[in-house]
Image 1 (cartoon, rainbow, N blue to C red):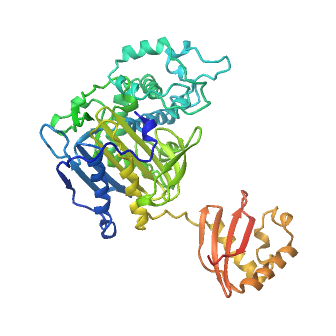
Image 2 (image 1 turned 30 degrees about the vertical axis):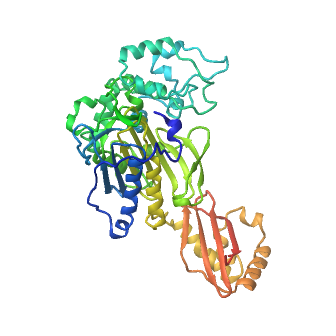
Image 3 (image 1 turned 120 degrees about the vertical axis):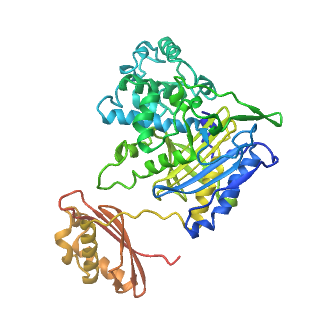
Length: 507
């Protein structure tokens, strides 16, 4: 699905064109965010015009609900219908997350293993010829993270969507040429995700279409989402177009087939918002009953980068410095650590007639996505710009880590030790390594030095947990501030294995 293009932070096509009809939905955003939404909407509309996209829809999900949506252009040029929250778009490779989650659900049910050879579940692969005598055979896990050694197959893979299951069986029986030895390098493979679809079919005993629709989509209330695009009413479908020779040309719709597992999903803004809300609901980890069709811990596995890191430049907002992010393909999602947005999970979709993009920010409970009906016009640029608009406005609130009882007790002891100038008040909470790493006399001298420089400190301020057994804090003192870090040991009870204190810089 043109992932080589989609890994870029921006995708802007062509020159300016005459704008088609536009409208924006009533916003349900809080007043503070409503002040930002006109700028966000203008970015999407600008993309729609400059990239020659007939129609574009976008949505923002926060804390389990769709809080904003926008619409621009038309869903088909013939009738000039404007898109709505129920207009159906093909989302191309954003379909892969559904396939990946189906594999994990079957794993949870004890019906397959990620570390099993793929040929365990697809017997036609048993005769494949590998590139070297020491090549490892492809595991299910390798297909999920695109390290199976299969060649990048954009745009060939797109056109295989309607392939019959019989023809796919024949293709598998003939084997496949390898681009490289499995498990040695990332290389995006639509073919590999088609194989995962076959695994879902063989293991579940149902066509992967039926399994994913019935076991994942319908329980989430995604009643209009599925793989058979022609089963949907024509008047609800966004028809696909390509831009060539300074004009739009209709892309023929491709029927559901064996390659649908890699990119065949058709969905609406309102349905996909339910999917985004479900994925984000897996964060943070917590107690409480499971409410989705797949466990929260399993959803979080989608974010585990399993292969080789790459670097992606993410342009800054309005000329700001770009962010060079390290990325890895996880399972149907690309995981990155963004300079401004924290952990992001993203994926794009490119398909004949369609383009799409989604970015999830699990640290903030926010997801932003957009669908377009023009070939390979994935709106990654305005999606990231919308996220950065929210961040710049201070509207991406990080989720705080609860302070555990163990960490709170250790923090109180740290304050008592500083005030006393001695380890004695907290000696019973020290881990066995603490005095081996630094003597009590040396700590007394260190406390005295810090007091000489900073003075007495108010040690009753909050500690910010960085985990259940670690945290950082800032004390306000008579002559400055002290920065501190606490790290507890993996023991029961959890003792203090490290305490670090330093005078904070005024810069």
